[in-house]
Length: 300
Length: 99
Image 1 (cartoon, rainbow over the protein chains, first blue to last red):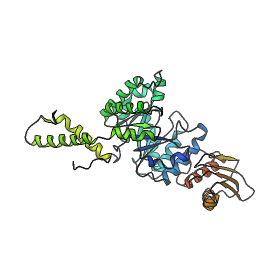
Image 2 (image 1 turned 30 degrees about the horizontal axis):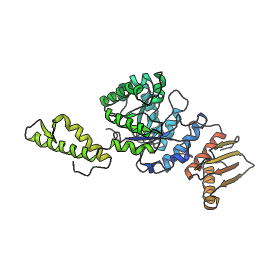
Image 3 (image 1 turned 90 degrees about the horizontal axis):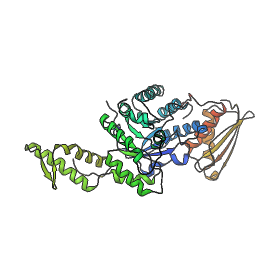
Image 4 (image 1 turned 135 degrees about the vertical axis):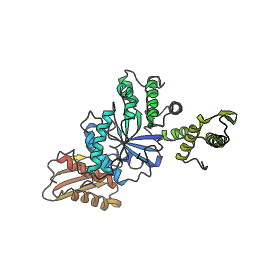
């Protein structure tokens, strides 16, 4: 049976450096959907051990009030990832983010160690979810096999900094360099029935450009975005939460399709728009998203 | 656990604590410096001693400079310093004596 939280709402996934106690003690006050406690790039090489003790006690002792606790572990090309997995599982992390994923084999390797850790620390087998960060051209090209690699896998996230380095370009702010990866990844994720998240936006002085980017990735089909600052959370939630107008329209579509179906009518209009069965799933998804976001009070 | 060599963990940033352990003279010699020593001195001391006790450290000179760390941070810094003094970074007893 699939994990009950595999498809939970994940619009905002905020990175926090495990090396900094001041950052990890109370991030729930900003109400992100998920926090990503980082053992990887944000932690200096000679502080990897220190970050794990902080992580362990934070996972065990801080009540994150329903915010999903994802941990980004170090890459499989480092000496750190095995102990990272042990501490994540022992602490009861909800999800492990695998850095620099390039193939299904990478996910299988992590999965094997996670299962061993679940047995070692007496956690229910299968309780630790996984997500994969694609950070290279090879990783992006293998998006579908990564998405289909494991029942534990909740989805894939683009890591734009490393990816553009591999692509031999830079983050331009226009998004042109990320177009191919974004498109490939969202198509692969949807084909496999998993979620997909966009890369971070690091220029905190350009909130207008950030907002445009969030609107664009929402239109592309993404489930949310990796974030680096609490100021970005509200912008993402505003854009990813259906408006009252969208919710009312979705309700009408669902009700009308159900009623007309019983009468043997396949195509009709709602508020002047032609509607048929193809709109049903989209309208149901809008209502589900509104429910998960806490803005739906109807009875559908 | 024996303190084999001097080791340090943590920083002097807000909400953190810097913990130094050194080989002792047959007992625990604990010195604490904290801006909140009057309000929380007893609790900080108890947390440090309890953590050292769990790790079976009974012979060490321990120096703590506290910058308003939560209990979980104090424990994390003491454990890190003790394991560093033993050169251990892998196969740690998460959920065992580290808890």
